[in-house]
Image (cartoon, rainbow, N blue to C red; front, side):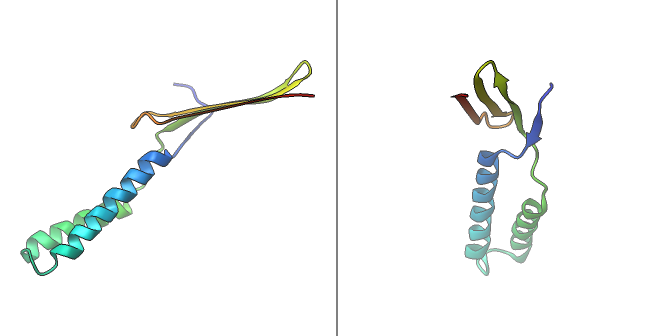
Length: 94
């Protein structure tokens, strides 16, 4: 697949941050209430997620230029993981 750029999806990053916070809260709430082995597994999972490099799943296509007497910008993006899309168009007469 050709693209102008691959970058990080804001929705996927937001979801991962929310999952991380949920796991963090679960670990905090579980301290002293579950076995040490279970708690260590929670902390390991939390650390694994925290240290994981985000994936570049947002594909971007863009174009900018002048056509006759009009300046234009075209931007399209979509995430191959979650389906997030963002489009932007600008047309300005010169």
